[in-house]
Length: 153
Image (cartoon, rainbow, N blue to C red):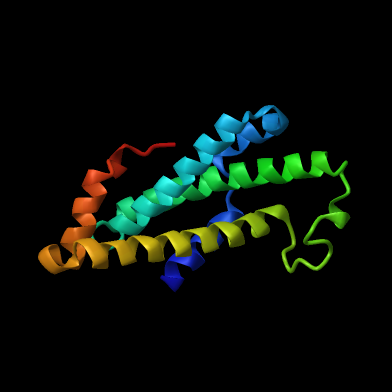
């Protein structure tokens, strides 16, 4: 799990394909924000499900969740900055943040989100399916039932 979070944090160095949406951040509707948030959550949950049986699919879904998450998070920060009239120093995190830029801040929060969703998925697998299917089989069945292969950029 720690290696996955580290890999996720390293992705912050590469620009996201989804960043083109950021220029129109203030025009993004509530429905679009919600939809993108649901896609991020689904990609991370499916990445956690794919991890035990398909490392390439795990990485693909992790990258989709991260790319979408970077764009979503930066658009959210842009909206926050507009809401407080550009005075980010008065934002709740102020000058105390240990992060050098928005990309690192987003990577940290996305890593925490992935960890939480991964724990939730694994707890669900243990509670619901583990006894009859085993670890990998339970993950694969849930992956198929959630249509995880259909998630794309």
